[in-house]
Amino acid sequence: MSSLDGSRAVAGAPGPTPEQDAEDLGLVLREARETQGVSAAELARRTDVAANDILDFEAGRVIPAKPPFAIYMRALGFSA
Image (cartoon, rainbow, N blue to C red; front, side, top):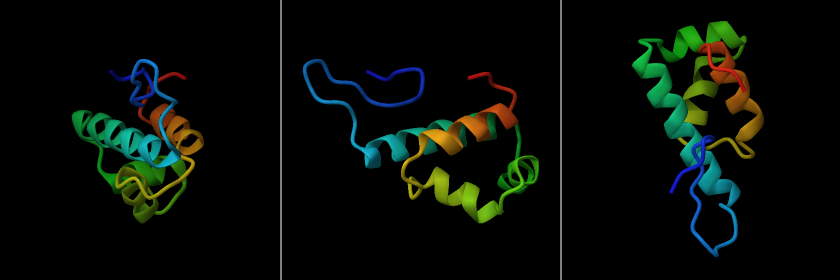
């Protein structure tokens, strides 16, 4: 089961680990970006970060992931 922020939830289990959160949110971001036809370079320009930062986020290497996720998703036109 997934929540709106892309994290996994299992009944009776503790919440996702920061690593799982990072992987899940990275996947959601990449899918949202690709669905809109926005390149990592364009999203980087919109958020004033390096394109490699976007790619690191999508690969699940940014922990904690929720703060930058919200910034990237707003830049794609999604509301928090």
